[in-house]
Length: 299
Image (cartoon, rainbow, N blue to C red; front, side):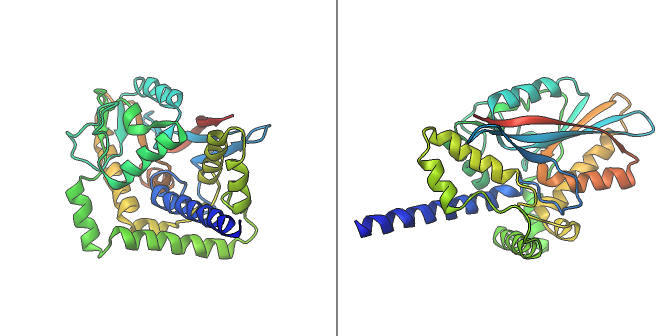
């Protein structure tokens, strides 16, 4: 029936629009918001079979002249339970873990709690975790470990900073969208988005629809240049630049503790290029290693 075909096509378009809106809402905490010359902290590795691959995150190691080992652990807020279990084991080997979470320092997420997140973005992330049948970071990471240090803004600090810049979530997402469009215009040769009508139809008609949709999300989130944010815009956005400054202040204090020889910063991949610039330029840290961890295994 012609009407049924039209409704089906409209539903596909609405789903595609919803996916893109989700990615835009989600990208500032998960996707690599970096200029092309910036180091990568998240990537997608294609598998050998259809709908097979891995979304991987980086742990980048640094060391300073005092021999302090600093690791930037790129976070994705959705991932396989095994991925988070390995991170929990890794964090127990560290003297201090500086973590991101816009909350009061004494508001520690409890694993598996229904109240693990009440923010809009957190609720969206948790819903998407259920849709893709993967874990949600606040449900899986053990934030009660004694070596965990809050290294982020509080909600009131975030509100005050955004108000001082006449910034709100709408203007922030608008700036991100404009940056994305500008980059796509300047880089016509870059690999196109995975989310198109053909790929979505193919995924929904596959034998394993869940794996196929998970594959498309992973491929899009790991796509280099998915959303491009240069250093200038990064500093303007409170959710990026000001939160980076908060993390670096806590790091500066932690480095004064002689017992902290192995330190990790556990922050969203979007933040890592800016943090790396700062620790390299002003804190005397030099890159010593890079390893990739599979956050989503799709097969």
